[in-house]
Length: 502
Ligand code: GLA
Image 1 (spheres, rainbow, N blue to C red):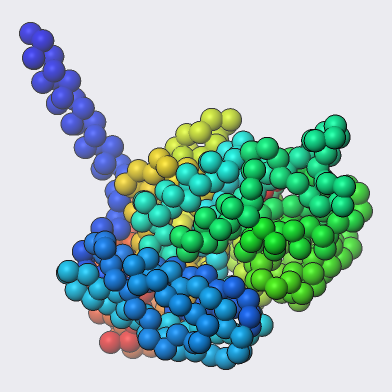
Image 2: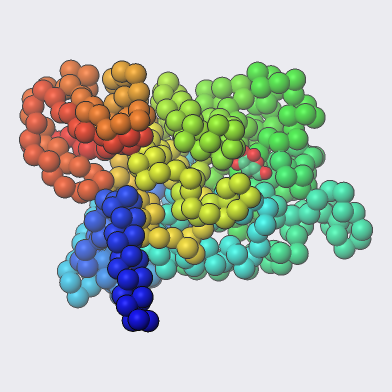
């Protein structure tokens, strides 16, 4: 009797797992055992500033790495694939990266550009905010960084670990040992972050980079201490601690100094911090967060920004997450003129995997199709790819969604073009992104409630003649097409292909 029950239970479990797997098709094939080196193909650093780059490569570990033509001052660890050092001389350095294991070897061209510009491709990484808001600590950040490595996500190019709001002390806590600044005015981390320098050193040893967060106002959005009247001092502290990215979030500055979202005085604090960051002795990627006020995309680059958020938060639960993905994701259209190497429009972090939603850490409320739309829109828009979910509990579906190297390569393409719509009809849209060597990435979207054919004509893309078509999510060739291509797209879903000359 008992064993029958177990058999029945087992069968039910198998059937429900199968049904679940069917509903959540993990389209990306698993990477092969042979080594493969992935995007980006180009990386910028300023002369004499610390260089940290972990070669993104898949394949059965252990891999053994090589790098031919590294400029003087850089050194590769052949076991980890981490390149570190400093290059004093500006210049364009072509390098051949290599990786091998018992199953084969791979080589790939890579260019190190030592000059004024950083963020030559959109930054990729993970941030604390959508997983845990202000409930963060050194231990939690290390656990997430370790998971970025152990899940293999870092092998696809994710490299920044960003600490968002909540790492320091609230201004109202003024008892001696709890004051947010020391006697010299230096900003102090909260108790949960006992040693910032040790934390960034630990991350750098693993080839990861680290981000920190503050506001130009007196308080951050979650009411922690801001940089107001300590801007240079704080930036210097962040550099001394070893941070590689600063998210500068408007927050209280709005109420303190602005009359509204159109007040162009919003430029002032960003200009100021841009100048300060440029004067430091390390590269700090400048992430402007002011929700699109004063059309930030028009001047973000001019004030030194490398990334600027174009809208409010993706995670605000007003009309539901799908509505936000649609509004914000499709809302990137029209801003493509301002994106490019060194400066990117940002529609906010991915709400994928386990995220804090309705005050609970739980799987994203987006359906699988909606998740493909979320990622596809971000990739075709050359948006920063920053994971918001808990890396310590990633399921196979989410890992494959986040780790599709051919889709990521669209985002990371060296030309740095932001894709744009080329055709629209009701709930259907087709977007295109011109890539290196004349290839075109084409995304098909269906916001409607049932599976529909979505067409694209070559005339919409400004091309003629036969093209080889590759399905990037499934990493499969679809064959040769002429004049047009129609794809069936599921409800709220997306497809992404690459058109190439034969
Ligand atoms: C704002 C930003 C978010 C996040 C929070 C932190 O809402 O837009 O990305 O940084 O502040 O409080």
